[in-house]
Length: 156
Image 1 (cartoon, rainbow, N blue to C red):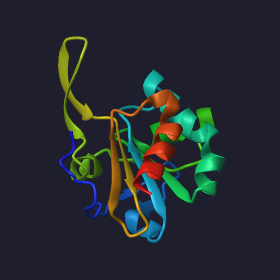
Image 2: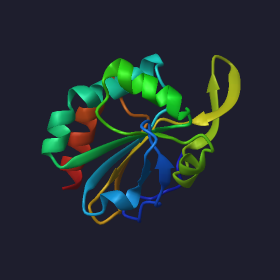
Image 3: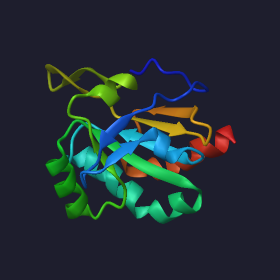
């Protein structure tokens, strides 16, 4: 679980997305950012989450949000995932886990009796001034957009 705190500055990340282009939090200064971390491309929960954001992308844009996904998968995997599901937003390939570590979402996980290291599904809502407005731990993958909009409305 992340040690970051709502109301504090979001760590500035730098990475490369599925089209091989560099991307940084500083590119979105003055914009509202949905930075969502997910475990793995093309798995049931991650696909449900990405498709929910895709299906509601026009609403998110209308509300002034920029959507950015992050996982430890390589660029090639992200490109395949983006193409297969027609995802309209960047997916950062965080293969060295630096961004996940900056945001405190890389750690020990358990699944079916096995312990391993991985990304904990977490979403950060970052305001125009670069501060974390809300942290959504364990997002509801099938209703993530609604969850985001409700959280944003609560914080005003």
